[in-house]
Image 1: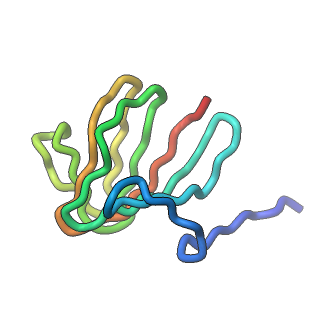
Image 2: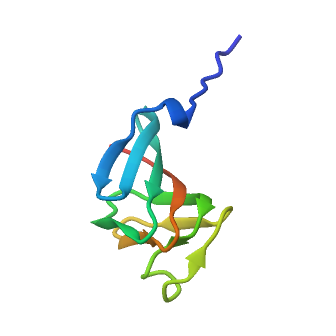
Length: 105
């Protein structure tokens, strides 16, 4: 029987990215990784560029990327796809949790 992997994010170790932003790795295997990121109210994930495609799913709260649709707010259930070469940063007026998955090299 195939073993099903489970992770409780509340029990994970969270790494500080910058003040008010933290992340925890849910899955990292050759060619893929999934990261849960929490952005605090009024905080921002630093500007960065993508060397691989990046996909974002908003789990809770409000996610804003000033480069997407003039800073439109995205709520729970929203999905964003960032192609290779995209440069951006993420913010949240009230705080949010996002699931990010991408290919890794």
